[in-house]
Length: 470
Image 1 (cartoon, rainbow, N blue to C red):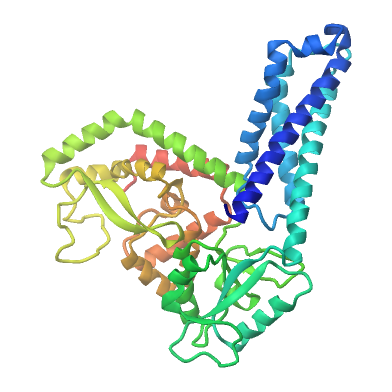
Image 2 (image 1 turned 30 degrees about the vertical axis):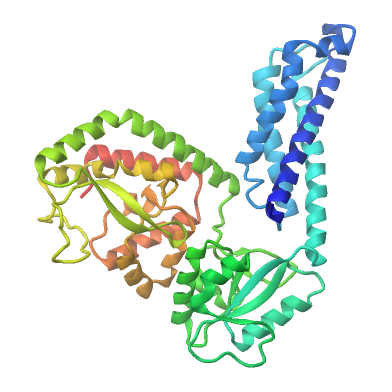
């Protein structure tokens, strides 16, 4: 069992036990406040089915809220302020839910509504936060004292890389980075004064797996920014935290996430600045809505499949490799709207308004975006989200990155069936238009929320119903 798993279990067990204690304490207070309306003995009242059952159901409900809040997503390097805010938010939601479901009819002159809610909130917050604060404090002390360290590679062998390793190693309060080696990004031999093993960049995938590397720190490449960005693009598929020093801040066009204020200001560019609760809610809603869509739209999808089969030869479903979350490849599914082998002679080519490769039925499908319906399955699989930057083929990704290196930032989130760029800009007919549309996708990264997703979905439905697709 990994240290991360053990720490997550500590939080889960601590939350469950403290939520049980909090509810029991509230139950005792509730009984005393409403003594005139309850039996003479607490033991008799607690024996009622609805009372003792609540001792089981309420903590379970609170655990669901804690999971959705994203508290368990990251178990190390927690912000104390964010911990307080998250705990208070979960406690407030739990208080409202419990009150209106279980307590709203249990009022008397002595058991006033506001008093009830305040006491319940105080119990849930104080007991749960106290346990969380203890667990977080113990973890922080172990990290600062170098009892808990996380193996890290520095990508680069320049003087700046060597100086950074020395600084991280000699800090009074450790940031948790245990530098175990350097990765050489160039063909030139690394400097002989490097104090740790030096690995070739081609080995990085194997090294990360064999040595259980937890973090990567990228320093500027000797050959300039272009080479640095190229290396960064190759690091994203590792699906690991990637940090950069302030000297590479200009690589980022969205808000930076600084992981530590007291120590060396390293910027985490692999994790989007999106609340964990939003990501969890977004994923849960993606699965639920996509499953419902596949069920409700199954007659439409069956009719589309029959129309495609009768219109032209070839399979009904068409799949194509795209670049997705953290630059991982996946196969996207669509209803076939072109003749088979449409790109055999031309190679990868973007579609245009009067594209002769598009079938008669295909024109209709594209106009109303019906060809995208099978992608609900991609969403359930976890390849995509309902809303997010549209995924592109590797052929076009390479061209876009050459002109707009910051394009790699969109791989911080799952690609979507629809996007802000698709709603505001539409389909792109060439790489230049893709880059123009990119500004909307980057803006989306800075504004991800359930409300924004709902707005985009609303405008997407409007686009489908009015037939504004290409």
